[in-house]
Image (cartoon, rainbow, N blue to C red; front, side):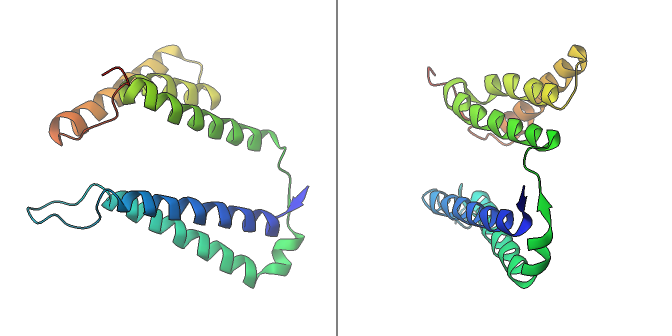
Length: 156
């Protein structure tokens, strides 16, 4: 068992590094408004990265101000609920890899049912409906209406 203070420091560092990485990566895509209207491709990721860095700083400051309180709060990392979170985190790491290989549409056919299964859903019909509905929604909104270029399989 560890304490909340240590966990908050670790999470603050991880969130800040990830947020800064997102900011750096999105700056290469362009940030801000286009001259012909709309926004550059890196604007939303940059906002997300800035929010993540801000949240990391807030968590760090809260932890520093309430050091004593957080030292006394115990955290059990091996609880069954925590193990489910770790498993979901692993699923998202695998998803990031297969997204590059299979593209968005095929990879969500793996991601959504897997997450539903880990979270306790066993009804295959419901899993299929949610997966197909989500894929169709993404295709209609981002592919057709907005004309967004979504990740394609490596063979395309």
